Image (cartoon, rainbow, N blue to C red; front, side):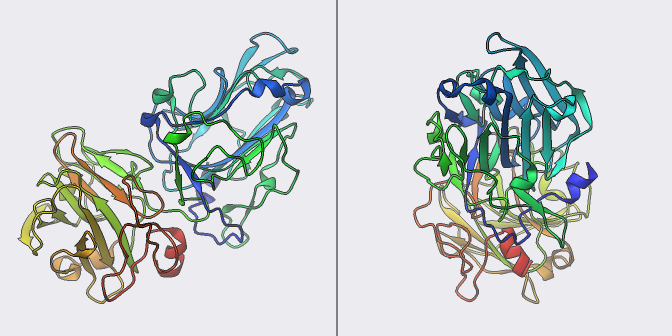
Length: 477
């Protein structure tokens, strides 16, 4: 487990092989991609030997069934509600019958929502050694410690893979809302009659030891094998090579540029407040679920550089606080979310609110009410000697600039995170950190390095600001 943590890919390593796109899945939207009528490709050889390779980034934890991949109704690859990786599949002797389900469930837990995981499942039931018939790798390392460890008999066939339909992002049994995957998927491979190695798809960086993707060249991909890189925004089920996947509910799947070679900020469920906001839509949407002060932090802490993100407030009122919060000054598991650590936010009515050491001060820096459905641009300058925070509204300056150093030295000495808090159940905000947005934009303006897609230009009239992604962090962070 410790090896997997140290080699987790947070997108900060220059790979020489850039992954440009991913697909975003959200269980509440019943989003999935389906391979229709895969049964037409059945053969005994194919049912005995196949592989899947996929890069994923989770954005929500604790779901009962967080299915990455489903083979018909009775086989799947998922994260359990407590974070273990689980592979379930029915195997049979011959080509008919329901078969007997075999399960592999890891002892290790995979709960890092800030990182991309690379998962390879390789099945070859012809192998004489039982444990060689199903191999699972995460970030280039084979899992060998299992809470549940069951393998097929030699030369058994999968009763699931070529049964009817295969799915990315949900279960094949039809209950897509309660079983769906929440997060990002990139570089998806289904390889028929190939028991692949993780080194076919990735390699360890020689300087950092981090597992990173590389181009697959081990075999030509033809039907029914398929490779999806999600580059066609109008049809994310289209294969880059090999067999296209049918549409399924592909219209509810969204394209993103948050990938395993450029990892963008999202809202993280790993910061535990006394009351936590509900995070959804690729970690870009945060909403209150009770009448308590709830909070959420972004996944990336910042200490240098100039950074930009956008917030759309559907209902502008005093119950929403939009801004920043430091890390590590107080117990964030107690009290009101905004009262923890050093926090500086703007309220819906246009006022400012600053918390430090549990005490609150309020002031007004102009601009008036945020108003419903306006887009607020947040400009965080940690490069200047004073460190500043300012807001724009619909592309225009919104109130005066806040000198953070004058508020608290914590803003100059500790990591600073995007932050949001709310107390009214059903209220919240939509965010855009550049890699994916939960609200509609028309401009798709990138930062001056060419990363991110925003409604408004990330420039405050004096400086360029940058999307919070690992390619920019490698340069400025």
